[in-house]
Length: 509
Image 1 (cartoon, helix red, strand yellow):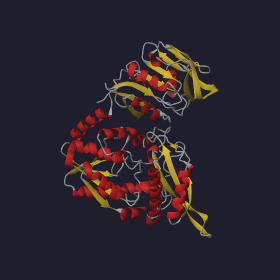
Image 2: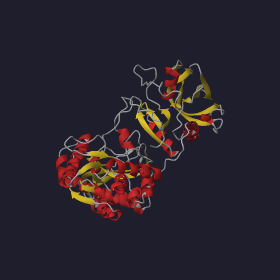
Image 3: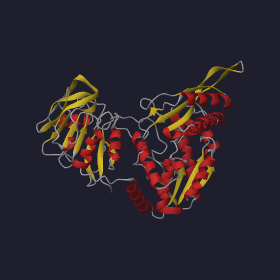
Image 4: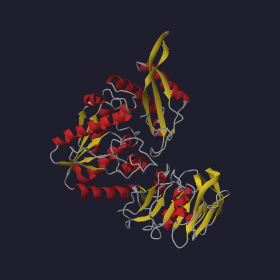
């Protein structure tokens, strides 16, 4: 097992960013809810306590017993984590008198401490808290301050326990990555040897041990996650893996045929299943996004169960679940709520007697791509934009019909082809079109029209946890609008979504 940093999540919106920054140092880490601390093994080299939207002074505020960790492993408390350390051990945490949100500068830095080595006087950091540490417990030393925050950072005497009231994980903290490197590498002693190659070797070895000679059935989507997961499982068990690619009637235009073709040269045993009508029947009359997701997930399971029964001795269902799926589906007792259900998360129904194998459920999206390239999976698969498991069903707001799907497929095809033709596709993390449940008045050939509205969406991101809308050229957007309205019957208006995540999500449903 790889050495790791344990991140205890108190519900901060930035917790995933802490994990991303640690992973960028080639050190493995895991996020666990503060109230579900895993067994502390020798592989855990240090602990980071995240921020939180709560105050340590609140009744029922998140709290943990640190006695089994403190003094035995290095600890870094970030924002709420630092206030919790001070509050628990006799300090005083009070509401801030001066607004402490946004950029600040470390006017005092004690460079004798390992956590702050090679940081510069006046280093910009990002503050985001309503409380502040007014009095430190006995044996806690101030090691950094800003003009308005005396206790910007502290260290506990005689142990490698630190607290900081700023967020080193965000880019606004200009030397934040340096501070995290000091903690993870210098203080915790991590070797920085967690790479794509080591992940591949360890995962294949683990899969061989777990699966043995068992047979696995796996659903493919044509995207990077399922393709990389299938390749890893195939490297481990060869022809004992059978892949199923289902046409659920909610794919992009021509995607079923194109994806099957792309898998031919990868050595995977892939079966194509046409189940369009089965999905349309299940979706009939449904308008609620969660109801649509659950209906699609249920039918996927039913289709896989049918196929699994055709394979003698199959015992496992392979899935391309990645870490953000897991994180977003786990609630941390209130502070962080489940945003939406994920089709890959939540287990299998009792009637399906298969165990689940998820070789990518500890990786972020960009890490999956790195592993895919190391496995030499074709770039046309690795570089594909993410596409939601429920497909176009969550890009058609309202009920689903075959006609609506066909309309959206045509719009989406024009948009995605346009991005590629204009050399913009690789500058975008994810793009697609949304069919809105409204109609608008237009004029075509001197006649009044009353037809559908579509929204185009293109975002930039690293791992999908946060995303910004892409400033596509006006010339391009104008050409897309013109082509869509002229070529797609029933559409007379095109709009462009300029919302970022957060507060919006990438998909509209």
